Amino acid sequence: MKIVSINNQKGGVGKTTLSFNLIKGLAAAGYRTLAVDNDPQGNLTSCFLENELTLSANVMDIYSGQTVKPHFVSKGLDLIGADIHLAKVAEHDFEVIFKLKEGLAPFSEDYDFVIIDCLPSFGYLSTAALYASDLVLIPTKPTQFGLSGMSDLLDLIEKMRSRLNGNLTLLGIILNLVENTVICKEFQSVLRKAYGEKVFETEISKSVKIEESPTLNQSVVEYEPQSKSAMQCNAFTAEFINKIKVTDNGRK
Ligand SMILES: Nc1ncnc2c1ncn2[C@@H]1O[C@H](COP(=O)(O)OP(=O)(O)OP(=O)(O)O)[C@@H](O)[C@H]1O
Ligand SMILES: [Mg+2]
Image (tube, rainbow, N blue to C red; front, side):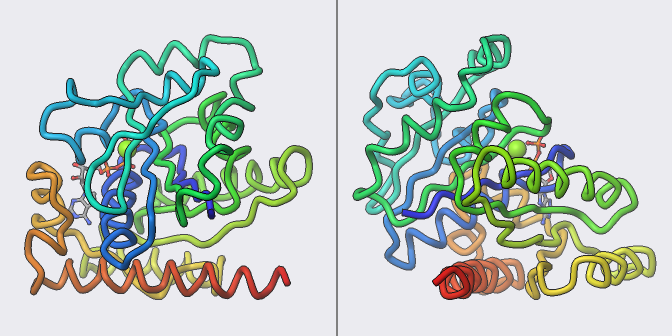
């Protein structure tokens, strides 16, 4: 079981949108996948459920040390969701940072991937996700504000790796909300120069279809299979799987 955090303290870069499409893509490829919503906004939960009140597994239970039976979404895809009550966890004592790892441990034989959609801030919840994870994937957008927090995030990941979780590896950085403008191309090139092969080859363009599809609880591949966005999301999933294999081989 590989646990992957989708993390960026910057808001609105597409963490949830890409988590959702990736999770659907992994499940469609036959991987047993557990989606974990680690954000009190509960956006990932809303992507999967027509009615959030039907949620039967809440990440709050994990943080309070209870056992959880994940919510069945579809074949090979389960969810541990979240709602606004999760915000209270951030006020608890620091021990919450260990709870997510402990709560996910019993599932080690049940899933190939656990994908954790993180909230847009540093703090206990974000630390809990990084402590629980093998890998981190960072979505960003090619704008000045999109790039400005990147070195702080990479510093945090390195501190987590050296002090708390020696297993933690940066899987990569994925560019989202890409537009065909001069300024966008400039930032793409700055990012690629700075972070080299850590940046996914696949880029996800800004598209109305990607924005619309979660409102119907569908990935863009389900919603508009022939669209450019669907092709990009398929390429993203394939590159994600491939990078995980390369990282694994590097560790052996
Ligand atoms: N490739 C895309 N094309 C068009 N719209 C997109 C794309 N990616 C994300 N969006 C839209 O941008 C907004 C922010 O996306 P999303 O909620 O996934 O970001 P986030 O990083 O999870 O935000 P937060 O930090 O609040 O959790 C949403 O309205 C989403 O529909
Ligand atoms: Mg989000």
